Image 1: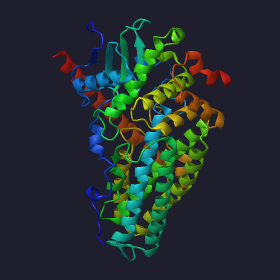
Image 2: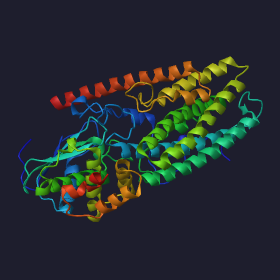
Image 3: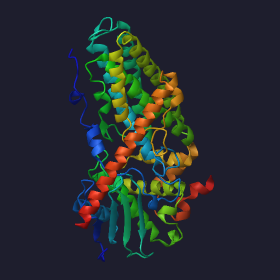
Image 4: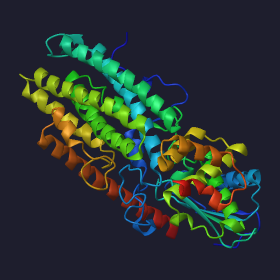
Length: 290
Length: 187
């Protein structure tokens, strides 16, 4: 079987349309509703958080649920690749411990279940498979040739994001009174905490005698974490779509310092995106005036 | 805004810079949609391309059958969700179609006292959306019923009573405003 699968070759049928982070960030529209158009501080996008009191709550929830589903597909593909792409060994070079392969296989099993659950939740919410664009950034983080970078990028950054998103979705289901959504997200959240913990533990273990490799992996994680901030959509700040689920992250092996760093990356990404939006607005105004 | 003749559709802006929308294509979709729904009024569609949000509202300039319908849409309301920043034909039909039916309702005497779209409560808006989406489906517009059922449940509860209210509105035609929001009064 082929090893090291490029993102372009992911198997999808004609229902799915893929995009990447560069395309998404090229969209310079401002997701925050202009203050002049808000009815009140609780209006649609006074905050970007997904709460049932948003007028667009159900459509936003449907879009997010679809994003979760394709994320689960990619997480399944990523974990499966890591279990297969590397030979069993002591963790040096291109090898990974056999027990790490087993953990990746277990994760692939979990993700397959999550895909099924998420697809059924999509049905429940009135969403068709492929109705929303699929961002392949998650699988791209799983394409590194170094297994330790995959642990950092996928298990810690990607699955860490999943902890934040699932916590938010679970809260949404709870507040909206949706019995299935709240229940399913809670169960999947428990798995994600385990996946992050596996990544944290294996990263420490495999790089125990190789501090340079660990440093490189943690730097890579920061790059991925900033990408996963989606232009500042995640963090403790009010404008973010997803709040950092700090308690669950602690359980998964993140330190306070690491969570603070992720939050800061989100703020930086938010400011950069705002700057890009401002430039696009200025350019559009200049075009209109011409 | 220039004066419109009956049945004319205008789209503003005429040229888009932040999204890949074509004003003529939008006008053609809306014209065809209005014909399907039997709406012969002049229609002015104003698209805010600076935001990807999907809010859409409508108003009429007078409570008469020849009123001009003004629709304010954020770009996400007519966007192809499979290919962001491009125009979604079905999304346009669904979003603008709901607004055309709302506008037609507003021309009725028994909708005269209804608040503007911006002033409606979330439950009022959801009930009206259910009523409009059901009529769109019967007019042959491609509609995912479960999407609107989920929207209704989010406002009226995940319960048999909420579902019964959805079924009532979905199958209805010719309702007065008090009948549209009867499910709210019953809560």
